[in-house]
Image (cartoon, rainbow, N blue to C red):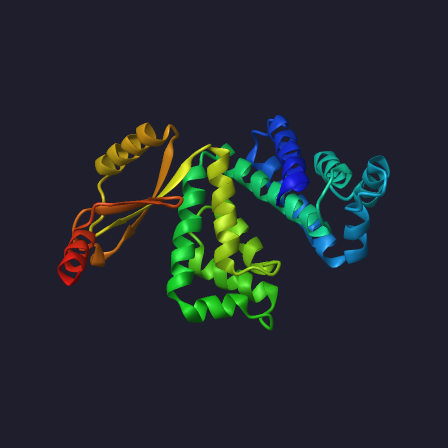
Amino acid sequence: MRGVSRASFAELSERLSAEHIESATVATRLASELFAVVGLLDTEHGLRRALSDPGKPAAEKGAVTSALLHGKVTRRAEALAAAAAEAHWAGSGDLADAVEQLAIEATVLAAEADDGLDDLEDGLFRFGRVVAANPDLRAALADPSLPEQGKRELLRTLLDGKVTRVTLGLIEQMVAHPRGRTLAVALDTCTDIAARRRQQLIAYVRSAVELSASQRRRLAAALARTYGHDVHLDVVIDPSVVGGISVQIGDELIDGTAASRLAAVRRKLAS
């Protein structure tokens, strides 16, 4: 989202934060209801266009949304959806995208309430790695001919007991309703929103060996001092690293591996 849509979403996100939801049950229900609103907007194209039409009065669009949802969702979900309809959007797709991001943020609130924000981020990251390394699994989860319930059962077989309830629910949502994206893109979106909630940066760390808890703490503290924010570490064991570690934060790569140094020497010898 850009321009007016980004500003509108920022206001909605602030409104959600102002709700001060501290119950995982309440946050999970809100997320489920907002995801249902996204499904409605994705299915009813005429409704989505009407609610995002800048030529229609905001109050009128909000009233229509409230009338559609009243009694079917909680008052909190109804109010957030109505506020989204009253906001200004650059395109009709941005309205649905914004409501989906609100639903993901509500899921993050549920994880936070259960003291499981780390678990959510780690679970999303690790599942993303599993999918990336398994073409058959990736194809099965993206297969439009496989019923939604079948995909959910597959995910539960793979992940039950390995990720939190909140994490599994969010992954199921992204698989069941990809909305034109690859699963990798959808999981990245969820991870980014979770990281923003904690105002953290995500550091992707490659190491030849597993890092101890003490090493992780020292690395996270050093990166936090450097970047002025708390940093969440996603560590990948990669034998090709040879020695040392590499750290990627956004577009910046901090590479202290023996493999990179050897490659640099080879380039100099070849020049």
